[in-house]
Amino acid sequence: MNLLNTLVDKGLRREAPTREEALAVLATSDDDVLDVVAAAAKVRRHWFGRRVKLNYLVNLKSGLCPEDCSYCSQRLGSKADILKYTWLKPDDASKAAAAGVSGGAKRVCLVASGRGPTDRDVDRVSETIRTIKEQNEDVEVCACLGLLSDGQAERLRAAGADAYNHNLNTSEATYADITTTHTYDDRVDTVRKAHAAGLSACSGLIAGMGETDEDLVDVVFSLRALDPDSVPVNFLIPFEGTPLAKEWNLTPQRCLRILAMVRFVCPDVEVRIAGGREVHLRTMQPLALHLANSIFLGDYLTSEGQAGRADLEMIADAGFEVESADQVTLPEHRAAGGCGSHESAGCGSHERAGCGSHGGGGVCGSGAASPDPQAGEPRTDLVAVRRRGAGTDLAPNA
Ligand code: SF4
Image (tube, rainbow, N blue to C red; front, side, top):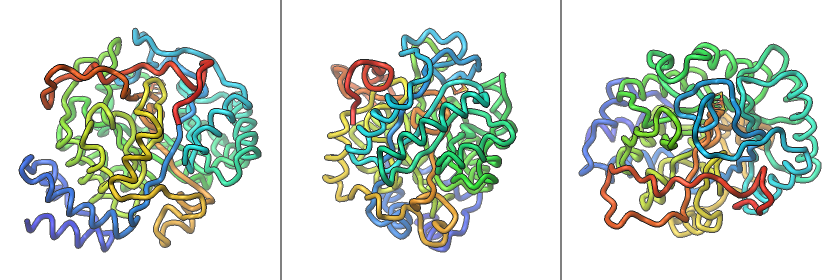
């Protein structure tokens, strides 16, 4: 396919595709999905080899958010039966982080629900970052605390944060349809503040909220323009009790096309599969490793992922290797000032079905499968609310 040859050539040169080319990737048929994956995989391998970076989420403060992001189980008025708790103590957060690190995670993403941190919250998180860094040598720390006020990014950086995550989530044109309590511009402003403070910027999207292909392409091009070091791609987990509970729009093939499009538009950036991996890619997850170079290990903010051991086995079986602390994530031309090096990192958004947005997606792995699951049908059986790890007495999944 000429389109794919063109996109591979451009990706190897770090040249952006045109909007039309990006749309054409999303419009390919299921018959072509392996060709699309094979082409984007060449770009992935060129910049990131066969390495997979593991990230570990620690939900510092869960639920009770005053914002109304429709996709989020922690939103104002959410009826989702999620864990709700206030700030974890630094030692408890460090214990959760250590579990992720011992499971192979190179980065810990500290996430808190809410519109944004108060200065007192920044103090708390700064103490938590220092505790984690004292107890876990070499770990990268990404904070994901919502909208930042002036000076807060600098204070987090001074406390040892490597990265800051805040997702754009969807296109500017549709942003007001999913959230009314803050704006798309607010989100862009926070990503810029993180960048300006010397934090590695992490910003991504959520697919599957009813958006058009044009919306997906718009948000990915907007992300490219913001130049984040990492781009988490969340696949909506339609939580019961949230306004988007009925939005089951994704198939594994659609998820692969979206990841391939993101890889072509952001060829040398850490593309991370975030929330919804187990729910929407399901048995096709290993193919997605040929597109993304980063995933979350274990559980998500408010939902459970597959067992950490299963993540590691999948990576090994698919012929990939877990990136170690002494390997630099980003290609040399980006690593000097950005994430992926030891020095910095990147993450997602608040949702975090994976890191990246505040929401909190997750996956199970323990739910019984439907008797005869059909592609595209709601798989509510795969959505399991997190009941272990941070905020509980049970051991974390890592
Ligand atoms: S995404 Fe973040 S800001 Fe929005 S409702 Fe969820 S926790 Fe609150």
